[in-house]
Image (cartoon, rainbow, N blue to C red):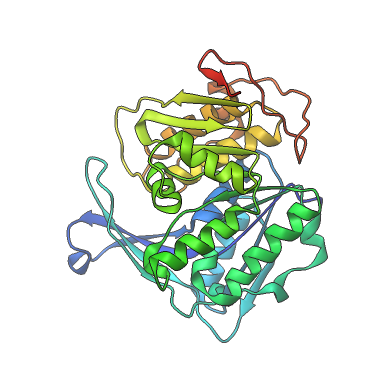
Length: 337
């Protein structure tokens, strides 16, 4: 394996997307795709030219082969995807909706191969990655996945690598809301860059303003917090600055699923390229706007050429973990005393 820029981990499922609207029980024709928030980010970063390694498990079945083949086709390194001969690959059904309405998604993932990921799947080579991206989803799948999440994030941070975290809450996967809040915030405490949505931040912190939510995670140990505000854009904050970055207008919202993953791709890629936090947030807003204009979770993630044509940017010398600097250069920012 060549040098790893980014390590991501979790579950990728086969997704069967309805080709007609209406109750899924009445739909007869589906298109086969893949789905998974963590792997959406891996794909998006791979399309931007990063060498991305994917840590996961799939079943010894056609769906597992489809998942691995699809990720490899996107340039994601699957050398550390284990084929589990005792457990199946998870899958989901997704409805087709009109006018940007949120689709109905039915999951079939309990007892899946990926839910049995554990610390035994970590090999030293993976810990040499420049950056680790994590979400709250693997930790919700099983106790062993939760332990894996904590160990990977802790070891990477202790090794001086940068770590990003998107809560990506899945309440139905947790035993209780209180357990979800406690465990997700524990994971966030290991990250340099935390990226919750506004509603997630309110639930996880008990605060109802972007500034207070960001302060909560800065106090936990984050170096930068970026809060997704939907169509309004996003709010970003460090110990010394804060800014609102406006969203990108979209004429036709086709599918909202995956927009947050696209946002994470923008923020992570820009910070790893030594751009400032506001520039990174703007890139996140733009990539999120591209994703919602395409049917599918990751089909709208842009290539490097498309990104550079839409958002040319100049890298700066970095001084944060991973070689990243939070640059204070926008009229929308405010110094924090």
